[in-house]
Length: 400
Ligand code: ADP
Image: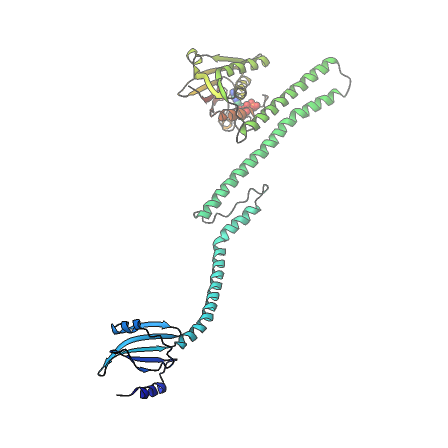
């Protein structure tokens, strides 16, 4: 058998020597060290470790700076516990170089990630920024511009489509407002120009009191027209705002019509307004509607006045009905009627039928009446035949 010193010699010269290598061989039977290269007793070999190895376990653990391995070994000379330890200098050397490499790799990949993300997000968000830029170009004077809808199927396309629809509605509404203002100014200017002309002519020379009287009467008529027009315009503004101020209370529609009849006849003696009463209806609560008395009177007065104005007998027949939870009021005349073409537009502001040139009017009475009835959750329908007559039907929700 080779003695321990000889082994030590061999061990030192062995080219495969590991860094800081320590080998300790312990006799299985008496736990005595039979061979050791750990002269300075650096390895901490406790009883626990020896017992584990004796039990047949291959024990590995780290005892800084050593990596330790304990194993059971036996041959013809007996059983031994071999503890081998060494410092893994190669690994720590590699670890040291790996850290800067990993830092660099980390930074480079972060850089790539950032650049990639920036490019892709830019590409993905481009349609949105295009829409934003386009929207910024759109102002009150360029409502005709539209944003790009792309294929119009994805979320952004649908958003652009909705936005374009909104622009179209705004454009129409602005155009209507513009037209309304120009029509209103025209309607207001006509009587004012007439008043101005009459006064100028009147003042050219001395006039007789008769002449003054007739001129003043004519001016007064123009002033009344102006007052009527501005009242209607104010009411249109009041009833067309998004949240019209409502002073609704329970009111009888037949009484409103009686009042309207009285007022109209007071100023137009030649008008005939026949209210056909149905006793069963008028005696019941079915005539009660929820609404603004004054506004409803304006609406029905406009309808009645039209019927009288546009018929040679100046007569309107008013009939009531009570279908379901509604009250319907029919205003019938045997006048000039409305052509099919005009019928489509009579509710538009300042629109006048082609057969009304010889009749006075401004073309906003029906629009106002329609707006008022709509505010009362009702409807107006007109059926008419040229030169035969017109029936205007107002339907309002009744309270019983
Ligand atoms: P206007 O001041 O011209 O009467 P309205 O708004 O009251 O204005 O009516 C609009 C148009 O509707 C009238 O110009 C006329 O052509 C038509 N119209 C309304 N009611 C009647 C009716 N009862 N008979 C014939 N035409 C009517």
